[in-house]
Image (cartoon, rainbow, N blue to C red):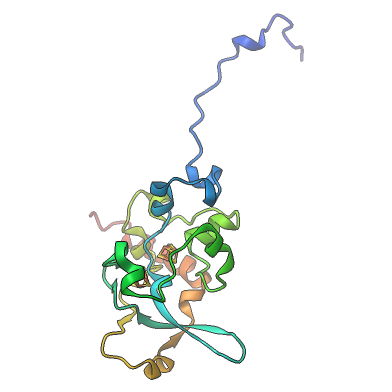
Length: 184
Ligand code: SF4
Ligand code: SF4
């Protein structure tokens, strides 16, 4: 095979290459506020109450949701004032994302901080805010409101699934297969 010596590199016509999405090319620190907010997949997992063993520092999840979490939409009902309303709510920052040991393994902030891709159910990937629920990743349908509960009761509500990803991935693919013909 011969190379055409008359070929001029400047004549090369390249196909349009789609720009990589912001979460693949920007660090958490480089994101705009809109990009940062859109990175939340709306799973609601981080809004579940957790229990910490004071002796060992071990943190476990409960299925008891913060009183401001809408357990159906899995969104905070007063996001702008969350810190005033719930003093122990921790607004995420790039530094917090790297420091907090309990962020769910499915959390998009954690994934980006670790250099991992977003999952298929993330609304930024799927283009559909419902997929985080369809995939069984969000807390919809499996948590209860903390209203009326004593903290002492939380120990009866310890769960492991918010800190797991394997089941969520497998379960999600099964659900999507089941939903593929739903037509909505
Ligand atoms: S765990 Fe992460 S992705 Fe899920 S609601 Fe919390 S901040 Fe958003
Ligand atoms: S105040 Fe809002 S953002 Fe904070 S934990 Fe509660 S529901 Fe989540």
